[in-house]
Image 1 (cartoon, rainbow, N blue to C red):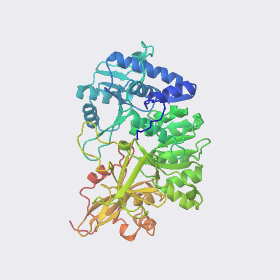
Image 2: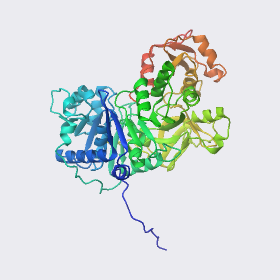
Image 3: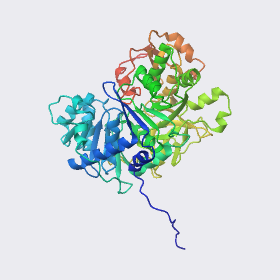
Image 4: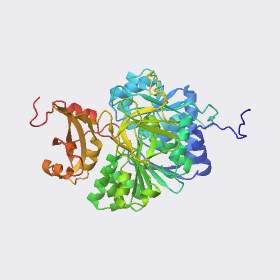
Length: 545
């Protein structure tokens, strides 16, 4: 019997449709952008749409076409967003470079990607000079600024405003296969060289529909969204697409991520929703506590990148009336995969249980599938207790890496996330550790994340990190590294007493070490790799070499 096909229009799922929609149906909705000098610049979706079309014209005039990589090196701002859409909407590939990486690493990434044109923030002029020198494929450099802010450099460069000025903005958008490459983002390279994740228009479109769900970002036209998560970090968590699709007012903070600067934007612009990693929220929380201030409009934040301590969740919810939703994902998952929005059953439970669930990474988004396996690849139960390697598959999950022949999928199409987790009978997933960070003691696993989260609840602790150190009998034992809160000192016995009863006895750290600063990586996460190097010669007390 012949198959029967639906009689529906076949419209390509390409990301140009998001900004087209925003400009047509939410054209006067504001986009607020903070410049490098602190100046606030106001625009809207209709203006952004026109400027992005001018970018497309300028790129085409420069010889950029489908498949060419266009790199950006900068902070969250309106020009950066116009460059984003102006690139992707003609079929070129937007490659966001992370300016917080080491210069050698940025140069390696740009060369590996084969970037042809660079759009850089003026504050990144020194890095841009390094790329011009070390990456032979870069032909043109445009600084994301007006002429009077153009930095003095010893190579040919043009200001963004001058670059687009001659163009009317008539370039044709879309009209290509939805499977065409759209964006390129490299992993942080915690093991080996960074790897390029090459998103398609289709994957980004589907990810946006996922992100707009009520139990995900839940953006609407009524929201004012502060995009703190950098645009170079895993597709800006999809907000660059979701905001114009929903018509939300968008606030872009530039490079100023300190607590005072963010608070100022939140209050002055009436921000209702925001996204950032835990270290940013810790900084904002310290500012609030130090000044005695509170929020007048902010009601919901998404925290991702690493697990927020329960104490942070409680502080925002209990002290400031801000709902916290945790999200989990990775560059390879576009990135949103799970969120901790409460179910009806969870909301019916006592508040402490609700907070416990919010501290988990959450439930799976539509279109994705996960499973837990042991080291032999055998499936493990979703009982909330059994830890296993977390595998994931779906239309927004990478199937491989750019210019890399490494096989990353198993026979059933699952991608190994490198995380160790549990999943309970209600579908809540909890990362117990990265596979490379877990402490293996006497053949058993100790979760560094759980110890860190509990230790972070102590008032003397600003940041906490657990690493494994060699032990002659147990292979590894945990050591707790602590960065004291401002004006506080660390009492080892008091901190161990604080942990006692909250974790298993055999999980108790064998030592507590106070450090001036716990290093953060380029995406705001604790840099465990650097900590392990710094403590390579450390020996536990009373343990022979």
